[in-house]
Image 1: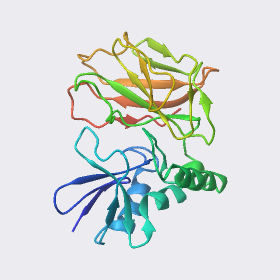
Image 2 (image 1 turned 60 degrees about the vertical axis):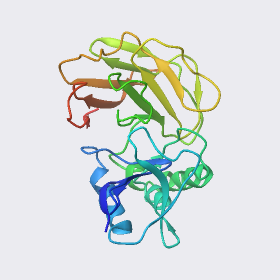
Image 3 (image 1 turned 120 degrees about the horizontal axis):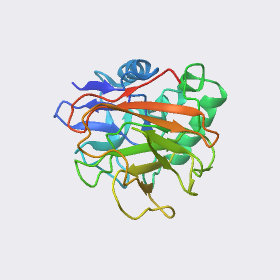
Length: 243
């Protein structure tokens, strides 16, 4: 017997946690998190699941990264088809074309998050529980291009505690992520893998109070907000819905 944890992960009976590869669903507190979890539960809970891997097999938390099947049903794809998950690409992904096509179909049909109450911009801040973090004490913010087209990040910005990070010119493919690492380092703006940016005067690891990260468009419009707990807190991040 396995147990659904949220919209895109499940705990197997052997104690292993599986994170669905290539997709991301709303976090707790987001508009579609409970719908995604309920949909996932209906698809897999109490059923025999089959896992298929890709090039990347585990994340830094030890979770198995996999395509999940119940019989011939591709669970990752069904969540995207329903508009309850979006494409989420860190590296080479065999099923990227399939998932991207299903996302375009869901958006055209205004299903789930692509209808009323969904994200307002082409970029979305995802959970800070990033699969990439060079040190447990470093804050890493993950931003995903949830549009159906390649996007130039130049002009978009993040704000936190009166600090601002402005993205330089760098193109990011549909469904791919950018990592903003709050330390000094060399940016990675081209080539394979996620775009990596460094924000050395961002939030220090010893930040005491919970902080809200604000994402703005080049025109200055707020397109997403996420409330972060303190760097040592176990509190989950929370989406601020009043944009």
